[in-house]
Every structure is written in structure tokens, then in C-alpha cells.
Length: 157
Image 1 (tube, rainbow, N blue to C red):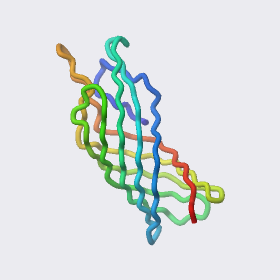
Image 2: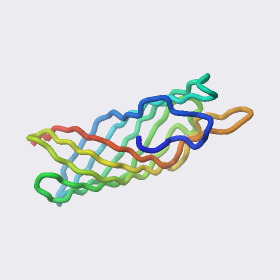
Image 3: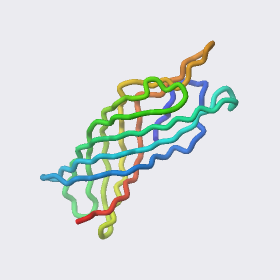
Image 4: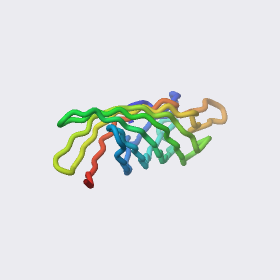
């Protein structure tokens, strides 16, 4: 994740920021593709000088329409779509949301192996609450998310 996912100053992230998941790409006519991803994140936050830990997990399922440009070796692409998300953790309200996704990158490969580094931006419909302090602030996750991704795939045909 390339963006800071917190709106607040009382909590800091103490986890590695990685995303793992799977993708299914379906070729369509005219250089278009349909992609479905299942992306898992696990993060951990600490509050009040490290005395309290707050783990959080989420699953995102982007549904994307991709357009590739016809270059011979490196194939640039743009993508746009919709992403439902479910979240679990301490005081995550609401736990289900959805977002609009745009992005782009390049695809290249050797034989059937394909690598596709990409940058993706998601705007979520709400900012889930991570923490509510009884006598203090409410800490929310941001609605803006930017990710730097590396897709590794194997072309079947």
C-alpha cells in the first residue's frame, strides 16, 4: 500500500504492508480483458505509545476491465472497475464497503511467464472506523487508497 491508511494522529501502523492474492484474466476482443482479483491484507496498529494492539484484515475483490495497447515487447494497459471489500478487526464499522478503481501498468514476459507491475487507486464509499476512544478521538481509515502491485502469472495459451 502506497498511501497512509489512517486519518488520525493517535495510532501508528506497525505491520508490513503487503498484499497477497490471486487473479483471473479473461481475454476479450479488441485488446480488452476482464480481470477478477481476490486480495488479502493483514495489518496491525498500535495506540497510546504501543500499549494497545489493533489487528485488522480485509479481503478485496476488484472486478476490472483492462485495455492493452499493442506494443511488441512491453504492453502498457489501463484498468477501471469496481471493488467490494470486507473487513474484520477491532471496532471496524462498517465492515463491508465498495470502491471505484482506476489504474495502469505494463505487462511483459518470457515464454508463458508474465509480469505486470501496476499502480492502482481505489476510492472507497466510506471511511471505516478503526478505534473509538471513550474520552478522546475517533480514528478512521481513509477513503483513498493507492497500491503498487506486481502481478505474476502464467499464460495458458
